[in-house]
Image 1 (tube, helix red, strand yellow):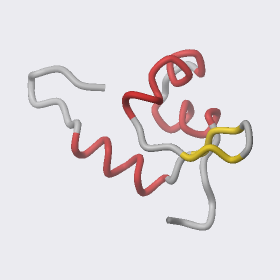
Image 2 (image 1 turned 90 degrees about the horizontal axis):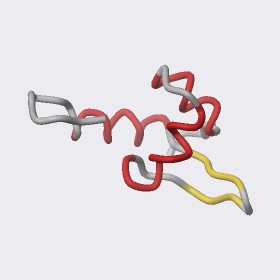
Image 3 (image 1 turned 180 degrees about the vertical axis):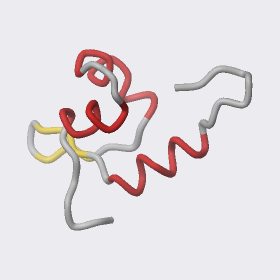
Length: 61
């Protein structure tokens, strides 16, 4: 795990998606950590999840 974890805002900016989309989809789409009441994402794990779900014409993220 990297030293810096992303917030919902960071992930939305990285994905170029609206924050509302991230809130609706993060549980099913991405590995995440709960820090108290807050959700955090490891950037390396997000990139790995995106590689695993790469769209090869069958749909994806």
